Image (cartoon, rainbow, N blue to C red; front, side):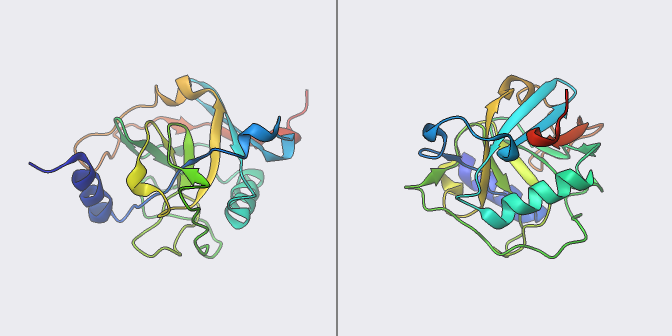
Length: 194
């Protein structure tokens, strides 16, 4: 009987939508993050606040902030959502093959001793090429140690995980979602007025 890991790995390989996500153990403990490094996702079920982790992945954090400020993520679907694993978004086409107009990013993998894929970890999706992350991301529903050191971790949910838990799930092993929930609006906290 195949293991959960082999099924998930096969699913990721088959769809070409590899992803990486993790939560840091040390960055969060250093006090309240500044508003420039807080990302706010408004989704149908509420607001989700994500602490950006430039100390782990400066280029990926810079890309997420750039795309957020350009409005790229607004109204994009959570196109691939697998129960007990993760919710993936950041592709305006909703197919898992789309990206931004910017070039792909080189990997910024963290060793597991520094950051791991835990519940609430935010990682960048990629293909089998480690240097292929662009705009797609995922948020972990549960720990996934087999992703540790294999995908770039750029953030972690600090509030609103209950809203993430309510994102509509996909079907079958691919997790592709019919009539997906959407990321209604993405903002950097420093840019929010009033």
